[in-house]
Figure 1 (spheres, helix red, strand yellow):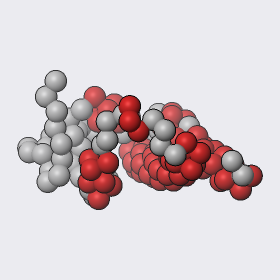
Figure 2 (tube, rainbow, N blue to C red):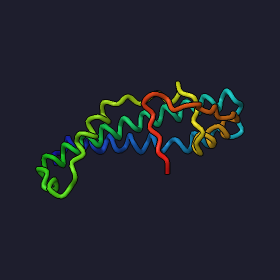
Figure 3 (tube, helix red, strand yellow):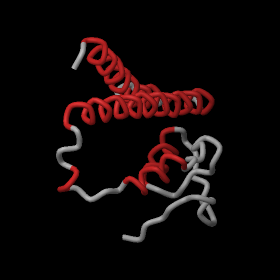
Figure 4 (cartoon, helix red, strand yellow):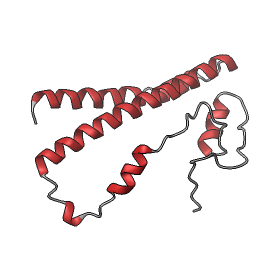
Length: 134
């Protein structure tokens, strides 16, 4: 691995840990705040999550290129090929969670508890949503 690639991967990984690692402290700040401040802090959490996701995606793309160059797919005969699924997934647009109603999940209840609001139930899955029955 050349020094430039190492620096880029290090920068991206630092960005991932800095953004995603800041989410819990920002949520902690939301305690004992008024509703307006809590909502602003929650928007900051969403922003951090999106920044971290973008950095993680960039990191994983760089890492994949590095592996491809170094290993020349030596493991491919042993692994199932999911390329078609991954290509479709990359073309799928994920709805902006800020613009959607809050789903009735454990995470939604925790977030709503922090901002002292009630979750808004979704009557039916939004277009493109995937649900899994466990």
